[in-house]
Length: 531
Figure (tube, rainbow, N blue to C red):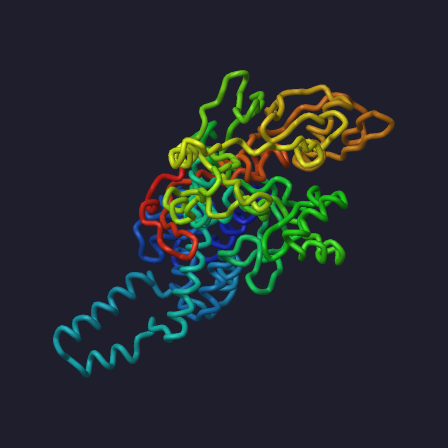
C-alpha cells in the first residue's frame, strides 16, 4: 500500500507540473492530465515519436525510459547543467515545477532534433574537410559536455543499470559452501533469475548499489533499515517445483553474529554448549557474543542461501534412513547426493589423495575422523573398486533435538538428520489447531514471519491480544535441503522457508574454479538445475 500511495501521489504531481510546463511549449495544459496523451505530447516535445511512450508499459525498462525522457525535457528548456539533469532523474516533478515557475526558462525546441542537426553540421564540415568550420562548430557546441561529466554520467548510468538489473531481473551468485556439493560446487558462479518466481519489489530503500548486506573491509552493513517498504511480489512466470534448487534469504538470518568466516543465528548460540562447540572452529564468535555485536536485518538483506526445494506448501515430509518421503511416497534423489561415509582400509593400504581428487571426492576430510569422506554413490563404488576388503559405511548421525528444528527436546526428541519428521509444510489459507505439543513448529511463523503479536501465558496462546488455539497461515512455506545431506545447514536445522523470502531460480553456471584457483572448464555454461 505504501508503494501504491507513493506512485499515485508522484503521478498526480507529475501531471500537475506538466500542466504548468506544457503551455510554455505551446501544448494545452489539459493534455497533461490525460493518461497516455501526456506522455505522447512529452515525447514530441523532446523529439521522439509518440509511440516511444509505449516503452513505459514494460516493467523495469520503463524506469530507464522515463528517466531519459525527463532529462531530455529539462534539456529542451536549456537546463543543461549536471545538477539539473541529475534532478530530473532523482525526482522529475521537482525540476519541472522549477522550470515552469521561472520566467527566464524558455522552450527552445526538441533537444534530440537540435542535437542531431548540430551534429550533422559537424559531420558535414568534417566530410568537406572544412577545418575552420569544423573547429568553430566544435568549439561553440552548446551540447558539448566536459570530459569529467562524460565519465561521471557513464559511470552513474552503468551502476544504475547494473543495480536495477540485479535488483529486478538477474543476479550473479557464487557458491561459498559445500552444502550442495556435486550438484553445485564451491567456486561455481551462477546467474539467478528473479522473474521466474515473481519479481520481489525492494523493501530496503536506501543501500549502497551492487552490495547485498556488507561493506567489504569496513565490516559494517551496507544499507539503512529506514525508510522501508512493505513486501510485494509481481506475478510469477512459473511455480516453485519440488526437486529444483532455489535461492532464498536465510529465514533465521534476521538476528545474527557475523565473524570473518560466516554468520550464526541466535538459536545456534542459545546454550553454553553450543558456544563451546562453535568457538572451537570460530573463536571470533565468542568475542562477538561478549561484546553484544548482534546484527538485525530486514528480509531482503538476510544472507542468500541456495538449497534444493524438497517439499512445497501442503506437503508432509519425512526422512527415513536418509530417504525423503513426500506424502508417503519416496522422493527421487539427486544424482550427486552425498553422505558422510567412514572408509576402513585393509592393513597397509592407503588412499591416494591425487586419485580422490581426480574422482571429485570432497577435498576436505571430516575433521573428527581422517577416514571419513563426503561421497556420492559413484564415488563410493570407485573407492570400493580399489580393493574388495575396503569397507565403506555410513557415518552414524546422532539424535540432536536441540540442534534440529523445532528445537524442542520435550516433544521432538527422536529426530536426527537421517530420520526426521513427519512434518507438515504450512500452506496459505489453511488453519491449524495449536497445542503445547506442536506450538514449537509454528511459533516463529506466527510471531516473526507473519508479524503477529504472540504470547504464551499459563499454557494458553494469545495472538494479537486474543486467546486462541487456531491459526490460519498468511503465506506458503517450503522445505529446503542441501544435496550434501550430512554437511548442510538447512531446513532440518532452522525450519520452513517463507514465500516472501524466495529470491529466484538458478539458471546456469557461467564460471567455475576449483580449490587453488584452477578453472573448472567442464562446468562452465552448464545448468544450475541438475537433479
